[in-house]
Image (cartoon, rainbow, N blue to C red; front, side, top):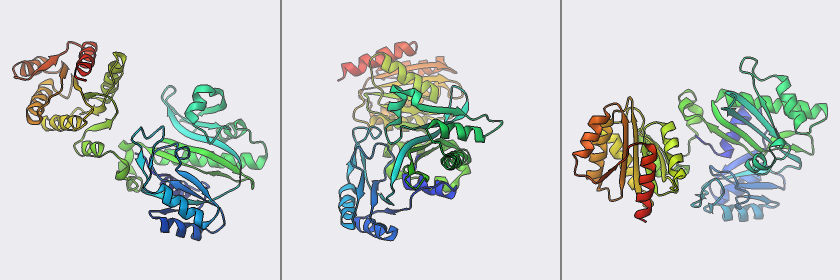
Length: 390
């Protein structure tokens, strides 16, 4: 689950981390009032959407007068921002954060993630802040300092100092200030079961303060039951209607921009299915995991969501029956096809529990189903079918 910058900063503030003062605004007048409350003569007007790259897209603007605050707020509110993280459709701006300005001496990057290669929570920092960290990681990875946190020892002063010195801080006070920030960021990550905690940029002001100029927090959705205060921050206006509908029916669905609809059981199998579709020259239209406890009705709902995407030219059903039995999937496929009138090619690959019965049910139906022997065969056939229907 994602949250807005202003929400992330409030959680950080509660943990004792330094952030700039700011207020949320839903209208132009509220933005001007926010600037008046903050005082001073420099403010930053920021679009609040669940995506990075807002500045390049025109969603972050500096104002040196209340008139400029009004002008920028009017320009950004209601605007659709297209960034490298929104996709070509972009996201409409419904909220603003009006924040006090500060004098920046240097911009850094700081982040906390789970490194799946080591199985450890890893702290990252770089002196190259304020830019796309993905680009730095790809082109000059040596500029990113990574320190794995020993799960037995936890976060230690050594970790903090290595990060602080690694990004070029030298004075005792600067290192102490940065170390305190890194400790707080790690504590927040662990306390709220984050999947990522990222500050880009983390800045050193001309007054020597270390604070977060931006903030991005993502949370493990499976742990939200432990954090009611975080779950309450969910903004459904930032989520796809289809993804919300899928969640209501126990489906894991993510909308993509390809032409091949995927209905799979198991997240790992779903990712493998998408990979092999791309390997054979196709593009998946979605990630859809019906889970292990899906019913006939759930499968029918999954089909309805897939077919609601007008870009879908073919559908691949790839089921490895374990808890989810192949005959249940087969009945769901037939029910959905008849109920919804599936008019695109349908490729089905079944394997596992009750596979013979599942195949028998499909073969005895009057549906035009393309059977596949294995995953590679299924991927080839669905890509050919999608290309043939274009």
